[in-house]
Length: 89
Image 1 (tube, rainbow, N blue to C red):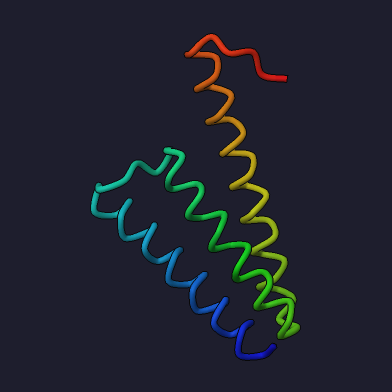
Image 2 (image 1 turned 45 degrees about the vertical axis):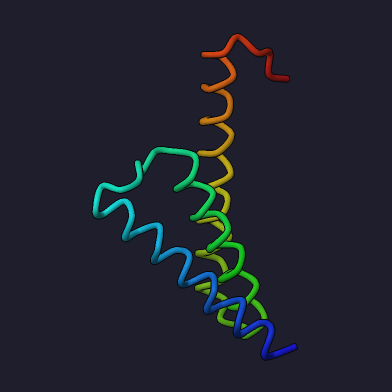
């Protein structure tokens, strides 16, 4: 289990750095759905890793980061649905 959790943490860090690099080099929009999904997946992976290692400040940071990502994804999906005339519950 420790190997899996460590690999998950490294993958989460790599994913988040990839997203940051893409936005920083203007290859991806910071307010777009792909970036938000990248941030959310990285936050979840790092949250699991840091919680397992009992690094609670980092774990809480990644929980908050994930919630921000979920809210951003929800708003992006809602805006897209309104543009396309789809009713969102």
